[in-house]
Image (cartoon, rainbow, N blue to C red; front, side):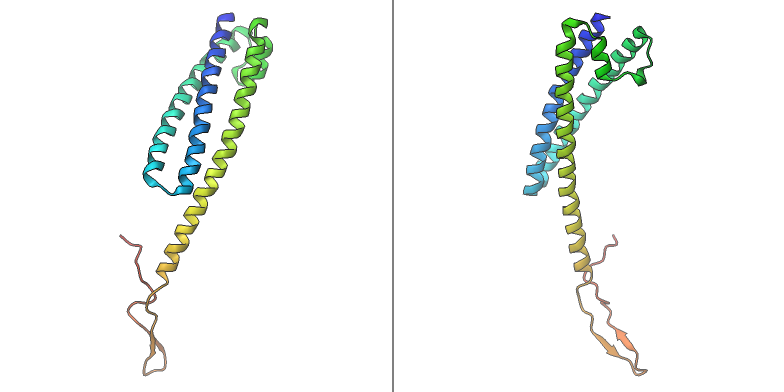
Length: 166
């Protein structure tokens, strides 16, 4: 069972390194979003997707190890959390395991915060684009003349400068 804990610690350390990389990519993304550079944003998204794929692979490895440990400890894998596992961890690895878990927890919190900030920037940009489209749609000629019946006759433009239909 000690071997599984050694493997788990190695996977958690790798996840920590990847989370640090993801945090750095999110910081770059925020700078790119503010600079409004589409090409750099597309490159950044590719890097982020690659990092997330590597994180998913680590996640699968961790799940496999946790499932094995849960079976050895006769506990359901769903009820087994990392802090719980750190209590079952051999003394020689316990300190490293807890330190790694604390580091991961801090990184994940920072990632969540930065991701929310980036999401707000994107939402603001989308709202701005939508407002500009709406403004352009309502611009144009709105000359109306009276018909012989006394009713208003709208011009052919009907207040539209652009048409969204493709």
